Image (cartoon, rainbow, N blue to C red; front, side, top):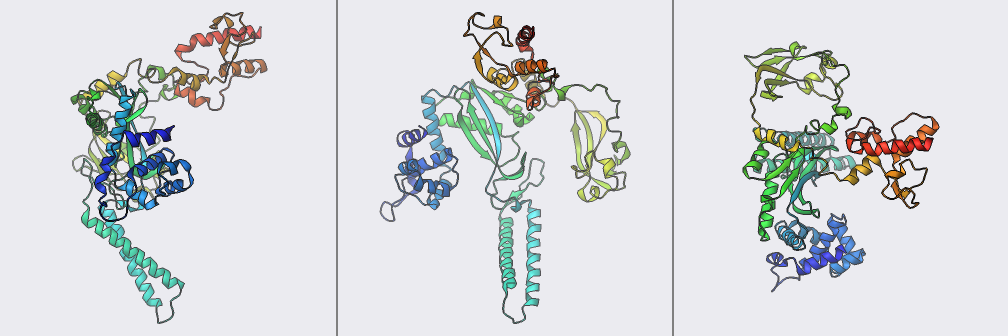
Length: 534
């Protein structure tokens, strides 16, 4: 069991001496909890989804397995929390010991590594995030609110007894004073965080290492967790949390950590012969350049790799329009760049309403063309009478953006991106990663395995066993059953609920249009259907 594996690994394979320097109570002081027992219950708790110290403490009092692994010591939740918070360096040694055991058991193939990540929220409030200017403004607003409450309290305090309202106001004053003092102290110590362009980034007062990130569930304050997994047995060979919302610059750091982990356990560099796979989130010219300089065999997808795949040419989102529009007809109902007053000498721009726009990018490169970009503000565009004619989605977009091109085209400045596109645009790129069973369950949706009979929609001659055998097995294809039922009832073919998404995933506009490799199967089904109807 997993519990037995944790107990055996901690007792026999993991070097527990890394925890000894933290304890110095041999001559005086109370006896400490055994770090082996604490490590066991923490690993088991994380494996079962218990991430809080209080939940692990309760499990040590109520669960027999946790009692056995902890030696029935019943540690307090503060002890568990302190042990977790103080071992970021020791946990690296524990991870490498487990990695060594996995390698000795032959679970690491060193042939293919897949790198991917996800955005995880941290235990920090997003209200305490902002640039230094925004946080200073927030502290100023708190101090202003404190002054207002003090003035109100002085007017109400005329020697009478304090009521509940006055007590509540005093508590609010104390809270605002404490928060304002906390902000001022943090601003005095921490420097401004900037990006590569020198623009100010938001910092968090509670957790300065975290970042403000956009996810599909909204904006969160947290980290990007990245893991590198070996393809042989899905063993995680490296995992780390980064305080950034963009993953396009994290791949070199992750691969360097993989090298260090294997070097620490006395193994050769696996990246010399292995292949690294990532999704389009890690694609950037700088990353590809570093991979090429380090002689790393990596396949990094770009954002448009599916649009170049011939198997997705019939997908709905990649099909050309039935009636192509004339140049400029697509945006004719909205205000275009020609309606804006642009001064190339001064690099200023005014919208059709006469409002000035601020310069966004002075050297914008869009699809190989160079230009100057401007954008409005929420205050100006929010109340503009031309908003419905200027914005394509007035209910979603907050302000207008416009770019003026100077007619020059940029030269090819992304040679590594071009070379990577040539590598991944091969016929093997998707089938090599998606097993046949995935296509069967997603596209064909088999419901059962049953014994074939004469009324089967599939031709008995195409079965693996003789046609006369009563024990011939055939896969019941849901699409075949639907076709037979619809023909019997005289109904037209219609997509079932949930089939449209699967069809688009396979690059088909309709679920009854099979991929090229299944033409023989569908022809067999059609012949069997005709025999059944006769």
